Amino acid sequence: MVGGVSATRKTPAFRLTGWGRPPSLADVAVPEPAGAEVLVRVEAAGICHSDLHVLDAAPGALPYRLPFTLGHEIAGHVAALGAAASGVEVGARVAVHGPWGCGECRRCTAGEDNYCDRRAGLSWSGAGLGRDGGMAQHVLVPHARYLVPIGDLDAAQAAPLTDAGLTPYHAVAALKPAEDAPVVVIGAGGLGHVAIQILRATTRATVFAVDVREEALALAHRSGAHRTLLSGPGTGSVLRRETGGADAVLDFVGSDPTLALGASVLRPGGTLVIVGSGGGRLTIAKPGPLPQGASVSSPFWGNRRELGEVIALARAGGIRVETELFPLAAAGEAFERVRAGRVRGRAVLLPG
Ligand code: FEH
Ligand code: ZN
Ligand code: ZN
Image (cartoon, rainbow, N blue to C red; front, side, top):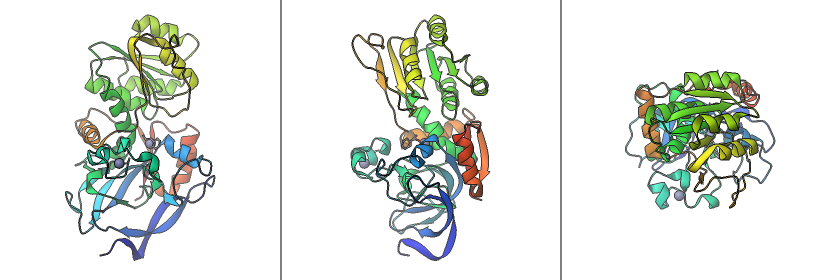
């Protein structure tokens, strides 16, 4: 079998075909794996707010070549192997590590494609991000090293965990807060509510959650936040009083006001972690809005080892993503609901 596409079989995919043009369903030929490639039969694909950033990008803003199938949160089972594929069997249930890099640099060969050294020269960011992704019945994965076994974990959980779980897990893993250390989570939506669960499952921190939506704070409470605060003019002073200064702030919004709030409640030597892609700005200066000794980080996605740890944590019942399920055929409606903020937790497409 020579890699390429099958001559006959066509199955549905949700594809971006033009910048500024809404994505649409199309029947595409089922790809045939070649070399080290692995064909995965998709069981679930999550919708991420970054997908909206891709749809809204101006021509030339992203290096991606059109058209491609969307979807970078993918889980399913192995359907076929290229002649040189190894380390995985047909039928194995898997989650896909989505940030595909160059595949050759020291970061990529270590499973850290999220920090590929050659990222600036690539015309893709990963599955569904310039390369055909998982909002389809099939996805072609470049190498078995991008596949993480999920055992009997529900694919509609495993798929969103590859980003909505992995991204906060990677952010939290760098913190190592002491017992009872106050950690503030700003934004308790798709990623924030999972971050709260990860903090409770992997640290002894005291978790404060801030959001502008009552329903998000209810989700934060259900996820294990010790304290929830509806964001308003006095939030900073309340947080400073109740925390005595936060050891860390995880900002899952990343807007001007949330970055300013985060900087204002940090203790000296604390860490501000910018996860949300809100494009907000914060002046880094001495003197400036940050306390003495503060650190700022902007982590991106997570590595393959961490994805294995996230899946293991979910299989042990330590984390669970709030989801709303849609058939692939309703992908357009699902995207509209995500954009309107009318999905509780993560929207997940089921290709069926
Ligand atoms: C993916 C691609 C580009 C920017 C941000 C993202 C995130 O959704 C990954 O977690
Ligand atoms: Zn994403
Ligand atoms: Zn690389």
